[in-house]
Length: 281
Image (tube, rainbow, N blue to C red; front, top):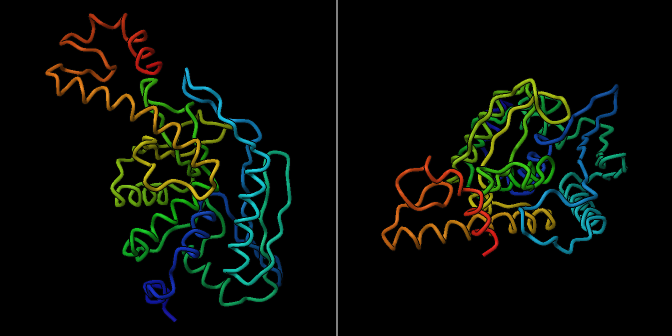
């Protein structure tokens, strides 16, 4: 059987398979130890709300309940797809989902092929044929990746006005980082690629693909609490964009900071106050 011919069969690939692949590429491993094979996805679970935009009131969100609902939903979805029991184990800052295979089943072999023979997110690669699948299948891969590895937060923002959604990819896997950027761009997004640097979160080097929250809202997450945070961040940006469009239609030139006029430097001292007025309006 030729792997390239196999993965181009569109009847095999569906949204559930694509979602599982996204989770694997985000925070997964394929482990073989003797006759036992395990598919492991390690999720980082937040127990406190991430940073919100200035002036935005805290939202009523029971993270413990939402995390439990999300974990049970993923377990049921993977269980049905693989016809294998999926165990959830809570760890200090998250949870692991593990599916065990005692034989080299078709499901296990298919997953290995779709991961291009890799065994963890440092060497997973998408087959070239994946980019030919329907937009919905490609979006579901992004949602799986996002559910596993992304947290919407105001901490990563542009000019203190627009929140950005950041997709982390381990530093060793530059090829997949570029594939992920290509996927997002192919879905009509405008992703920004940041190559890994010595200073990143948790002291580890990683690549990041970033895009503004209001542009990512069309894809979103499967985890509903992440979608609520995404919606809040997108609404802040859209409120600013609407104000800018009104001023353009009125004949004013609107600068990136939201100021009116021709000389950006001369108005620099006013930028902070003007932005605050936008957010508080």
